[in-house]
Image (cartoon, rainbow, N blue to C red; front, side):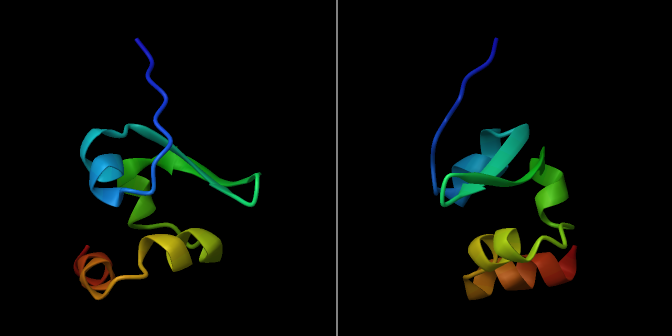
Amino acid sequence: MTTIVNTHDMNSVMGIGEKVVFIANGEKCWEGTNGEILKSDNERLNDFIFASKFLKQLRAGS
C-alpha cells in the first residue's frame, strides 16, 4: 500500500515517512529515505529541514 502525504511537518516525515521527496517551487530537489535526510548535503533541503535550533543539534549528533 502506498500513501502520499503532502506536509511541512517534519515530525510526521521522520516518524512515518519511508521514502521522502522534497519539492521546492514545483521542482523535485531531493529524494531519499527519512534516515538519509540527516546526512544529506543538499543545501536547499538542509536550509528547510534544519532551520530550527533543535534539528541543527539533532543533525550534529548523528
